[in-house]
Length: 114
Image (tube, rainbow, N blue to C red; front, side, top):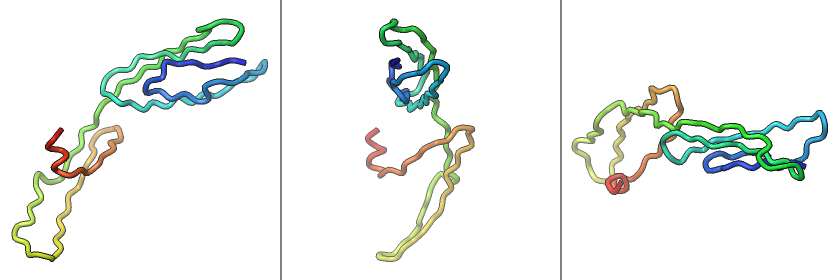
């Protein structure tokens, strides 16, 4: 039976342990969920029960960036409006980067506090 130990942090490794029969292999899934900007340098370390610790060590490296997003207009001005009448303006949120960008529209009061 072998166990797979890693200095996790933002890396999620599955399965975390198991047994390998002679001549067999096990696919490991390593997911990276960064919580901070910058470089990550960790190691995936394999221990083999009854044999030794850190029998195998593989570097896990990553760099977390923030994609630039753009709004198609600098302002949404509704001009004069009347009570209880709906008004609609449109804007386009763009991601010109090569990486996906997850976004959330928040209350302006919340963003002023940041």
